[in-house]
Length: 304
Image 1: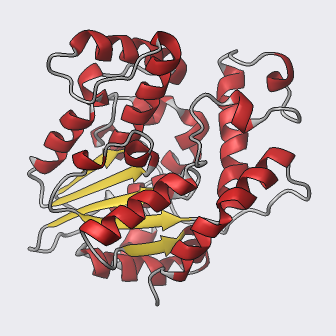
Image 2 (image 1 turned 90 degrees about the vertical axis):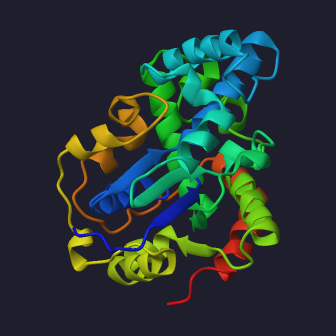
């Protein structure tokens, strides 16, 4: 797809399980574009892993703290089952990398937990258009629970009640699950952007997107300065394009198939699947606690 002459710098902040990887793959078809995949989120999970293992906070700057970041990288690489790079797990390095990107279009897909979960608001890069992808917490948290249980189970990291999908509890058994269940962290970044950067940042809802992909994608591209064409709605099912994405590890997206496998093999947006007839107690409990944040953002979503 051809690129417009105008440059764009866009961050799409989201929560897990919001079709964000599929949207990223879709937009990677824009020519002269540079894709960054969850750079701050992996700073967050590295910090959580390092704190749990070493009992200390992980520095947000790599230079001068190489030993700590190297240790965090070793711990997280084992959990992710992917080779990560320690200098890509520091907030300051990510900020510099994004601000010095030279492509015509720079698109970043990231999680609000990468900033709000680490109190790292000072590392939000300058001169980016901030956008937010939300989804009903019942759907996003339920899907996340399924994915994270499968991931940890396949790695043999679960024991006792945690090893049974029916008694698995994301609040108790997922060491990376943030206290705001990803939703409050996204909300906090949205509020920060509204108060300090852009009083009316773009918000889109994943379920709206799946219901009307052409309308929502067209409106989103127009709002952020990305060239839109109907050809964006269909893309190559091959995973070759993902190899150019910049992440905490060169093969991270391809390696973490539990979370990204379906999206990275996708070729179009598909109708959303049905929720199970009965939700687990942890999904119900967590969803209820953060529904108020989702609803406020939903009321401020992009009007079509």
